[in-house]
Image (cartoon, rainbow, N blue to C red; front, side, top):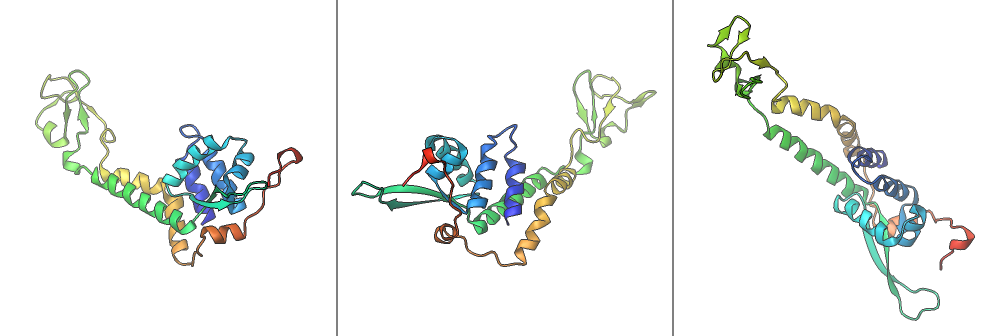
Length: 212
């Protein structure tokens, strides 16, 4: 489950398009199990406001979960709410399954029957034609445009059908679809906040950054 989540985060939170800190936060939560926001911000060298914003995207995508509870700080009489982050592996796996399912359905919905694929196109007038439409207009240099009589160019990949797209998608998502059946065959234990906190690995702070 950890391997799947780490792999998916790296694939879909590409550092060239997203903030690479998304990946680091997930890794930190896998290592530490549960982290309070101030501890996570210390590890990330970030202020908590920016951290909450980054974590909001991961939470929205159901990679991580948030839990708030009142805690009494040293020297205070009233408890204040403290925010913790952890990973619910079952929810994360379900979210990945849901995304893969909808990606596949979306691509299949774009399927274009082979007879309707516009594989021939004209560089002069920009017209596009199917193979059936150009059969009756063949010249010395090849099929010609019905609109302007220029020779058409052929590109079978120019308008890929849904089946071709689906095949490419399946190849790209193979690292996910290979792991999901393995996870379905084993029991993934509950990882509630209490469970995650009970086995949490403490954050080792330097002498100048100690907290109560």
